[in-house]
Each structure stands twice: as C-alpha cells, then as structure tokens.
Image 1 (cartoon, rainbow, N blue to C red):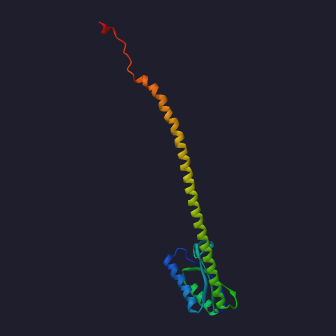
Image 2 (cartoon, rainbow, N blue to C red; image 1 turned 90 degrees about the horizontal axis):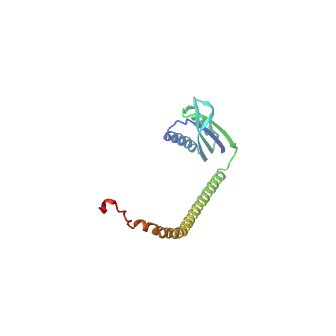
Image 3 (spheres, helix red, strand yellow; image 1 turned 45 degrees about the horizontal axis):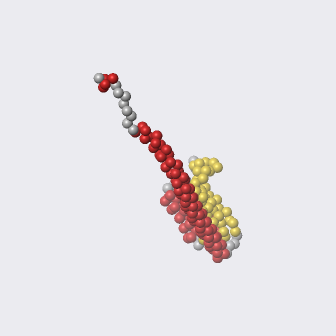
Length: 185
C-alpha cells in the first residue's frame, strides 16, 4: 500500500449539498478500493492564479490517503469526467506504508489537536472569568468612589441653601407700598 496526496479544485459556485455529495463520492471511491483516508482538508474558496474553465475562483480540497496504485487511475478518470472538478493533482508521498502506523499517527494527531483545542478553550474561559472579575472590581471601585463623592458633594450643597435662605427672606417680606397722593385726598 502506498501513501498519496490529492489536491483538487472544485467549482466554487456549487451549492453546499452538491459539493458534499462530490466529497462523499471521492471518499467512497477510496473506501471501495480498500484505501484509508488519513485526512480530508477543505481549504475553501480561493482565487485562482489564472482562469480555469472560465472560473476565477476555486474550492480547494486536500486528501491524504493510503491505497493501492490501481485506485489512482480510477480516481483520476472520474475527476476528468466530472464537470464539478476544475483541476486535480495526485502525488505519491510514500512508496510503502504500514497502515497501522498511519492510523496510529492520525489518531495521535487528532488527540493532540483535541488537547490543543481543549487547552485553548480552557484558556479562553479563564481569560473570560478574569475579565469578568476585573469588570466587577472596576464597578465596585467606581461605586465606592461615587459613594465617597456623594457625601462630599452633599455637604456643600446643604450649606448653600442655608446661605441663600437669608437672601430670599427679605425678598419675601412685603414691602411697604409708597402712598400715593390720591389716597391722602
């Protein structure tokens, strides 16, 4: 058994379900020929260096798999016929591979990836909790500062009305109206 990498570019305008059936077809073909897919990586839509079948963009997919050589001829024949595939290239990466070793390597890589994702999630959660704690502390400090400012602001405010009260008192007293000459008469 040999190890291969195939990269193919599919039409970027394909609906998602149509693209999924194409990918399943390629994976099924490998499984039919007793192959093993080490990984299947969708790179997504990218700009092409030049137009291919009047398309400026393509949806890139990389497959790393182990299979017998007879599969490659059949897979490339199907890719040439299928209009949904713009271009493809298959290379042999290893002459003879131990399938069990490849499976172990893939399992180890998946475990490392999951561990890294878990660590990243835990780190993000810790950062979120720390940010929440910092925000709560900041809010508490702001409330404390506001509480300190409130009594200081109230004390001068209480003195100001007392000072204004005497000024208003004379204004409230009725002033004697000057007597006019008509009233005397």
